[in-house]
Image 1 (cartoon, rainbow, N blue to C red):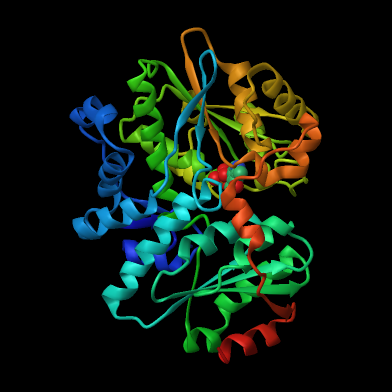
Image 2: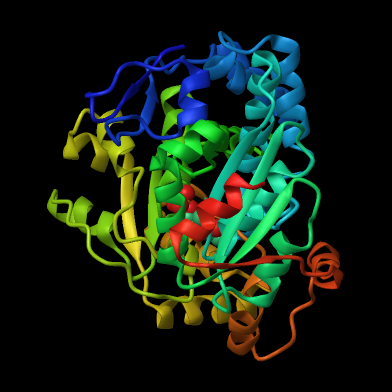
Length: 433
Ligand SMILES: *Cc1c(COP(=O)(O)O)cnc(C)c1O
């Protein structure tokens, strides 16, 4: 399969080039030339397949031309080593729990898949080592570090701002060892990002070592997110609840929901999508006005959605050929303040006993407010509530049990390298690695 850039000013790329480069040379996002529809027979038998079986069929449609069947199957089966259950919260509202992976957030799926696909390309080309640089303000670092942990031929450097990530987040990428190095930068998240950007542009460094990013815009992180939409549908079909299905996605950079829109193009019978925002409602405003006005993000309690210029907006525009009308036919929006998010977490807990995290709460509320008669809604519960412990505990006024997986990270010993925010010393460090 060939990939083009959403900016249409860069040469086409192979899958391997798109995965290794991440971003096209014209700063556009890679898009596959073809989105294959899966046959009707697939949808008829989908409720009798395992998650891994159906995900392999989806993966085959995108990557089957470029990756041998046995290898691709192994990558999919290794990636999906955990379940993604659809849990009924009330009446016609279900939660798709994407938090059963290693770091208890949905980014695990994309990160694990990308690590394994990149690992395959490295082995195939006989390259000795690829170095992944990732700047994080918290959650991306943990998903990428854990996704790439132990994958041969890849070394990951996680750059994070000293004293600006929570203890639990920090433990999730500083306690791993092996092929993961945590660099604690004396600066802000923006300084970390600047170091990574400068490294990618530095000729000397790129001549010395093979560098790549594991950014969420990478096709190998983005496309596998389509898998769980199929599984959501299959689980509801098993219960006879898949008619008029509405999928609601708490959205920040819009990678997750865009993967769902790809699923719909492949024939997945989703009636419509809802994109739920926090106060960073740039996309919601676009739906209302037809105008896209990015602006600086504001901090909220659903902080993984604090995005002021969602990167994957370019993919949505491309997918719908720029038609605002077509986009509005498939997607509606919602946006909530911190106060509304708090109120929703509290009320849902009191009414149903189900504990939402602040991101999932936006999704749940958008379904409560937006479902029409005869529709069934499922929202993506994108992280475990215990990842936002203080926030959630202060809302419901009681202690939240910490899952064993998170406790295990807490028990680990932090190992990190202190780094100044000055590029010369970062470069010097990498050159001598
Ligand atoms: C990353 C993230 C989101 C937003 O997903 P996008 O693909 O960026 O829209 C929502 N919730 C949680 C918990 C996340 O980590």
